[in-house]
Image 1 (cartoon, rainbow, N blue to C red):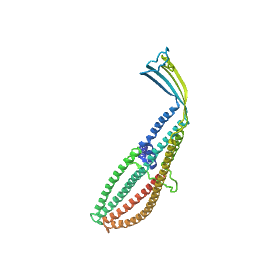
Image 2: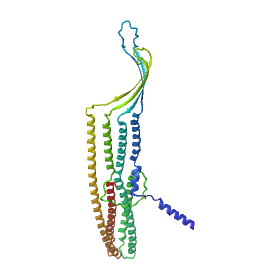
Image 3: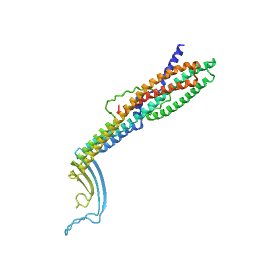
Image 4: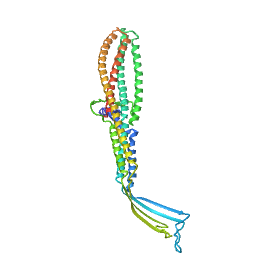
Amino acid sequence: MKKKLFILILTISFTAFSQQKITLNECYTLVETNYPLVKKHQLLEQQSALENGIISNSKLPQINFDAQATYQSDVVTIPIANANIKPLNKDQYRATFSVNQLIYNGGLTDANLKMKLAQLKTKKKQVDANIYQLKSQINQLYFSILLTQETYKLLEAKKVQLQSKLKEVKSGIKHGVLLPASDSVLEAELLKIEQQFIEVKSGKSSLLETLSTLIGLSLESDTNFEKPLVETHLQTKIMRPELELFQLQKEEVKNQEAIISLQNSPKLNGFATGGYGNPGLNMLDNSFQTFYTIGVKFHWNVFDWNTNKKQKQTVAIHKEIIEAEKAVFKLKTNIELDKQKKEIKKIADFINSDIEIIKLRKKVLKTLESQLKNGVITSSIYITEFTNLFEAQNTLLKHKIQVQLAKANYNTIKGQ
């Protein structure tokens, strides 16, 4: 007996714990983890690492090997009478191995590396901003599913209540208190409820499929969506990732300005070349020789026809564009926040009215129940008022979920 009881408890516990549950915050976390665009973070880092490697290579020695063979129509001759100087061959050969080493470029390489880091941060934040925008879609799907879930429960309660009333009516018919067809109206209403069950299940299935695709998690039809108690802080500042994106774009512009300032800096390179050829460095020696040269090269672009100045002006305009886009974004966001605040207040007022309406509907229905039981009214009159009460309860349910959705949207728009 004890063994059977233990197995029964274990089975019930397993069933209870095996039901899938999910919260709104878990959906947010899942979309930030599983949405395909998230993979772009890793790809951007890989791309940036390769680009940094290319830039850093400018600090390493640049090694080149060249070889050439030529034939020319004429060669240099020395017009000195009776000079026993053998003329150069018209076919000439040369192979060289050269090394060039950057010594100084004004910090341009380091500036380019900083620029690449700034670009990486900007691109990653852009990905974050794109993913964040999915939260509004998550809100709509989550609360729509929650509405179907709660509507289903309300339909079940309505069904139970009607079945109970049907038994009373059948008993009244049996004892001659009610007309024989009085139960038909209730049975028809129960069939309508079954149709509503099908409609709610179908709607929930479609919504679940879409949400599952977004968050990368398969959700079963019996998944329990927990009702969140969303709180809003109406006076706090906007904290959207887009604002961070604008700031990173400005940082990127600053790095671009630094690069432009260093473009005309003096540059110093060291070089060394060794080779083997005919002729060598001694043009009068008509034979294969080895040779080498070493030295340094200094370069400074003294005048660039105001190219550098115009580039700085272009960057300054870009900075102003970023500021303008930031101002527009904040303006639109504040308009949306104000709209949501009004929506929250409006629905809250509706809820207060819904509660009063339900109280009155229940009072009327209670009177009608007594009259139906005594055969004073028909089942049709009772069903009409019963449906009115259900519709009022359903409206209250919708408004309660809508106000939570409006609050969630408010927090999403604000960046909370």
